[in-house]
Length: 433
Ligand SMILES: [Fe+2]
Image (cartoon, rainbow, N blue to C red):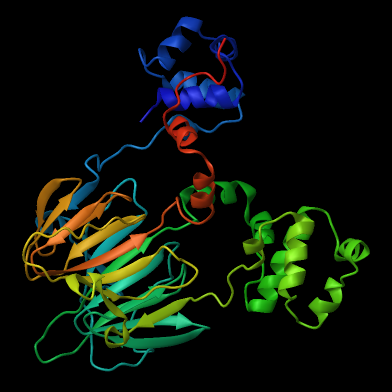
């Protein structure tokens, strides 16, 4: 969607008054003013001219289309059904895919996949198992029925026997596959394969693609273990300030080279000194390490709690797989325990994907709008939209931090409420004449 607010922002950022923009773009001042006041639309010719002469990209002129204006968006099971398509592997039907809810705003790409290949052993090198090449998106998977999950870890093929309620996480580009285990009832296993982006998304990819592989790879710091991760991160900060450990020693008499050689992580006192010396927040010295590539979580070993409390059991939360390096990506099996309407609203600072696992339909209230989520329906709820579920039932929930988590959340929190409002709504010039 073209946006006059975006156009104003570009002019403000480039310190162009309307008359300057008119001159640069070789169009009339009247036209510029009409675009800014939304009386006329920004045309593609003007955008092309702007991209040609200003340090801006085409994407900068477009804003997001909101497809969940009421705070949520539902995909009914019959719509999912219509999206079904069979994927072959080795010339034979292997997966039956169905879409579930997706929104333009959310980082989810969730599919319900039926495993059409039936195996009669659990060997990871079964020739009937067709591994993929992995994909850019993270994947959280919830298992329904007798499903074998295959993956390649440290160049070794592995298999995990999964059942209803089990879950797994795989990081980008882990090769994987799924099949149904042969069973007496002849049930085909299913998975909810919820793929998503986190901080590395299409926008970061745009930047990396322009930089190219040889430059992009130089960014990488070594996160293999806590020593490597500490020192490699610290060296990066020194490099970014064109400072050396020698200079640090000259000024503080502390020998970082010696500590590094001894594979020691400096004491808290020294890290605080580093924090002052480099003028960097303390938390920046502790990047993640031992990052998880594959995690399998068995249902019976999952944590469980009641919400709002043990004395008022409106919901029970069963924690599904999650990993420390994605602190806002959380999966839950949410059981609704109260048949009557109650007041235990949920208010969650993340994008939520919710799928009704069945067999019963449940009621919801989101922003005082009432509705029903039938079995196999799925719903996306925008962050920070108060919501409530009631009537006994079972839901699968995946929460994702999206763009506003981690550092962007901290930076947003540093802006005053007033300025945040301005940041989002401002359509005025950056100064008053
Ligand atoms: Fe996948």
